[in-house]
Figure 1 (cartoon, helix red, strand yellow):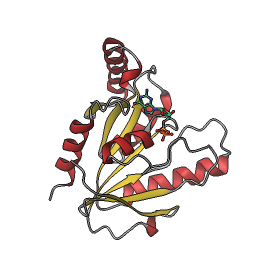
Figure 2: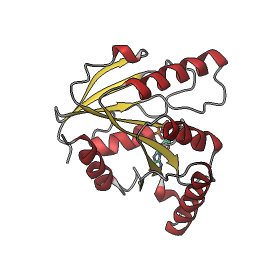
Figure 3: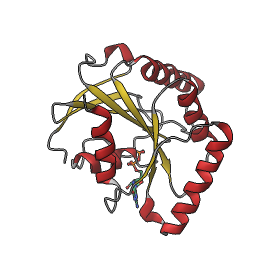
Figure 4: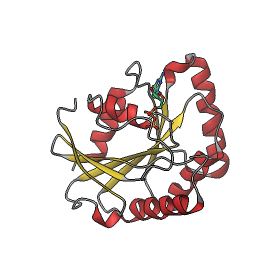
Length: 196
Ligand code: GDP
């Protein structure tokens, strides 16, 4: 279990990230997908990541140090309906630079809302990761919001779509920040990624 989670730094420039002296995993997804809630559940800290950030707010790369051993990174969400082109381009530039250049990055968790039909923006992002050698895994969120069979159905649909555009299906986990479903699996997955 995670014992210690501390905020380190927020910045909007990948070259200002902390020294890459420990393994790192990052979380990303559409805004409102449940990313902050998931990070808070995982670390057992209620307000480590700020929930429900408003569109247009400064978009930052947030580093947290976990158990003095690895970094957890909260990346700004994508898919705001109302951001202007400049903000969108700024996000793209920052995120693509971070994801392709960060040398200690061991895995990126792409969060997908398990209630929704497959969304193009998520499929596009995963395809981009796949074609750029970014090691992505999928976390289906909010599994408590509907029946198990509905969650399963939506996941199968998503994976089928994924399979149509890319030959490799990433690993995936199913979580709920409400019930704690998937917490142990996610932690185990991460510890496996960050171990020396
Ligand atoms: P973010 O914008 O991706 O950081 O999303 P948040 O973590 O702020 O969550 C957005 C909304 O979804 C909030 O109202 C959360 O309480 C809710 N939420 C997040 N995760 C879950 C979950 O697993 N189950 C349920 N029922 N609600 C969730």
